[in-house]
Amino acid sequence: MILFVQILQVLCALFVIAVVLFQSGKSAGLSGAIGGVADSFLSKNKSKSVDAKLARSTKWVGAAFIILTLALNLM
Image (cartoon, rainbow, N blue to C red):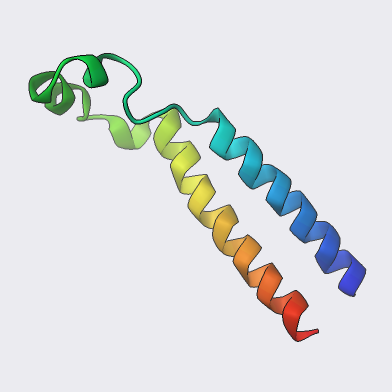
């Protein structure tokens, strides 16, 4: 059982690393070069963008990693 949880934790850690590396920086693109007007215009559909999906998956996989770490600590 411990081996299975350790394998899941390693896979989860690799997935977190990959997802974080795929995300773009906060100052990337047009919104970093020009200020507020472009940012408010381009931020209408940010929840449907690839970066938003990557950020959401980072949160979920990070939470799973923490839960697996705590489970391994208690075993």
